[in-house]
Length: 387
Image (cartoon, rainbow, N blue to C red):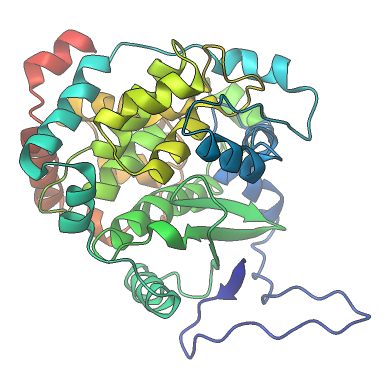
């Protein structure tokens, strides 16, 4: 079930039911910026290009028979390789460029997970100790509202709560409205603000700022010779997810990276057994395996959807160059790579740029980046050798 609401200052009420004969939106339309709204979808696009295809890909590669195959897989005692079906028959060509996994940071991904297990014993204990308890819907709404007040964006974003999401949350544009979808089955009290820093403080603010820039369209990006916004986009957002945690282990990014690589070498069943050394819960393992195998029909064959490696890739690149990156500008310039910041800053519109609260104190921000390095036992010498 999906619940939808615009979080405002006065109350948190579910939208009224639509009348039977007139189609009505479940939320108040967002005020449209002058002549900028048509670019909004492009500005929030998180893929390698801004052609508008990437979000469609993520929708297209979700199997339409997921629940049926999950039931069959669990009934087989995890010995059946799911046979996924898709609504889009043109997937093979589209998936070709997302089927090559990298082992560049495989050693680091394994080390990060092993460090976490050494400290907590199991992922489940780590999740409970650092994430806290799952939140009720009412408490999720309350946390989201408080965060939006802090960032000064109350009433700008439509929020959906759902259980039907492979990720923990996503920031997209639906009918011209910035829309945050939260997976309530993973919304934990100590992790929720990190997710909001990821989706609103990073994706949303960089998207809004991008609207003002000369590169706010595909033509503008080509004209200014911009690099792809990933892996910077997801790397930066992933850093912000763990930024103020007591133990900012990069567990999720590491497990996603590892799972994708192993999926490129293994069948679904083999992958499910393999990641059992890191995650015990069968439902959680299923979710990770589906993410890595999505887009494939016969999962008895080795093969992956490689997009999920972008998180750890981006994190390590940003940490490698953290001393030379202007993080304030990286957000203000919009959907740009950290590699383009110095070159573009003279061309950028910087008035009225939106920068999240956690970037206001530069020294504190840098201290937390150092803590991420320390907790995950990453060294500058190691990163310089890799990148």
